[in-house]
Structure formats: structure tokens, C-alpha cells
Image (tube, rainbow, N blue to C red):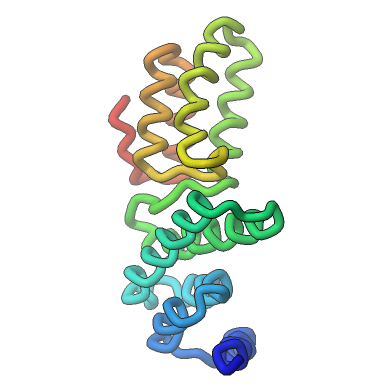
Length: 187
């Protein structure tokens, strides 16, 4: 009860922009249910919040573990996914000169939209092969991924490359638009 009251007080202070950087970093650990709000507040500080990156990265890792290992109801999974994406976006906004820590749901949508525009003119047999090699990467863990780590994105591009170099290039170009610092391991 006391923890809930403290967290609600923290959230009110967050909304009123009355939490300083050390308290935001501490809040990331103390109030994981407020991680999305805290990440937004940190992201709004931009590069001046660089000392919060370790706490944000840990919160992102915790969020990834939570969404991959727990059997969450759809509503909680959706909220956890939004928090995870907010954490990843905050890390990127604070350190735009670094590779992305995580490719979000929105990022994957853009990559697969580029693939779809390519696939409208591609050989249907190759497309089925591509989907066959992509599916295991997207299904690591108990459910379909709604985002990918940089390593998973590399493996996805390499799997597509093994079947259709042009499709892989289309997708890799979109990934580089999203993250200019991404090193795919393929041209």
C-alpha cells in the first residue's frame, strides 16, 4: 500500500515535470510500472540524460524478459510492448549517435512495409521461402516477436539474403533509414 502511494506520488511529480535526473534514474528501478512515463521524461531531456542509459537499458532488458517469459493476457502484453517500445525510443533519443538498442514494433512495420512493396513484384515461391526462414526468428520465445534485437535483425536479414539478395537489400535499406549506425553483416 505504501509503495503504491509512493509510486502514485512519483507519477504526479513526473506529469508535472518535477522529477530531477537522479530521481528519474532511481524511479526507473523503484517503479517499474512507471517505466514508460519515466522513459518519456528522460527522453525529453535528450543527451543531457546520458547517465540514465544504463538504467534505461536494464529496464528494456527487464521488459523484454517479461514479455517473453510470462504468459500475459493480451491487454497486459500490449501495455508491456508499448512500454518496451517507449524505452527503446528513449534510449535512441538520448543517444542518437549509437546503434539502436531494439527495433520496435513501428520499426518492424516499416521494414516489412518495404518488403511488401518489393514482394508485390517478386516470385511467389521465393516469398514463401523467405517467410519460412523469417518465421523462426520472429517466433523466438513463447509468442511472435513485436520487435527485434539488433542481433535478431541481423539474423533476419541474413536469412532473407540466403534466399533473395534483392529482398534483403530492400529490407536492409529500410533498416539503415531507421538506424544509420546499424551494421547488418551484409552489404
